[in-house]
Length: 107
Length: 155
Image (tube, rainbow over all chains, first blue to last red; front, side, top):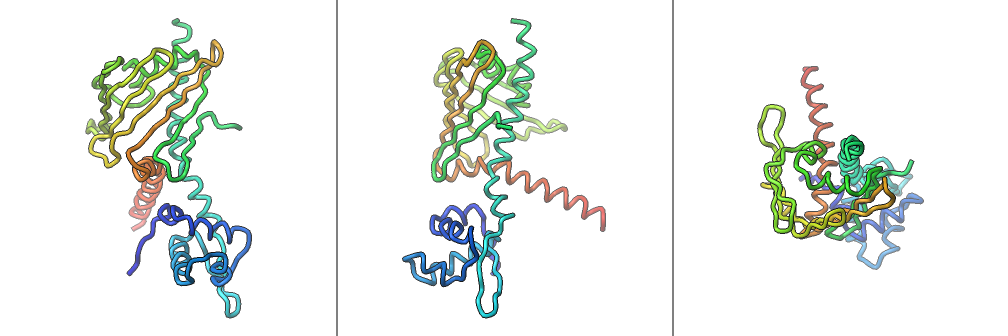
């Protein structure tokens, strides 16, 4: 089954956010990541699977080990998800400003 | 360059705050929020009804170029203090976002500049997040549609 994960759902979880923070500076194996949490190893594996599925994490095979590292491009996309909303208001307000400037002289 | 319009939306909360400074006297900034003819211009919508007073109501209707109504919104004004404050509800008709409570604070900075703070509160965190994501998702959809258009021509 191909579950299509929502990126925002993925980062809504505090453990998954902590994982992203961990691998932000260096790539780590699943074991190394799990050792930072009290949660059971399979739970961490599930979080890793979700993060990988929605492309926030990428896997890299190093010999026998698989390292996880952050997908910077995808992370930026998510960090900017409010930006289109901000831009929409910014454009509206710019318009408001230019319309009202015309009223200044008519005071 | 510093952004003129700022949004503060903290994780896991059902509200956000939009702040913007204007090169306008506060009186003009306020007028732009209470006069139908002006709202129509900057909000790009038709104002069907607007009673800018306490207990007043309003209705907006937006049509596409063919004249089909694509967006309807309405609300009730709870408080209206000229050049200072508007508290109103806002509801997008036929959308799953519920009713939002909007608190507009108008502030005079100098004779020619002013600040608007919009505090918007939703019924749930999920609803707030959906609204924040709306232009983001639309952007993706539009990009996707454009891609399909181009791909369609290649067939």
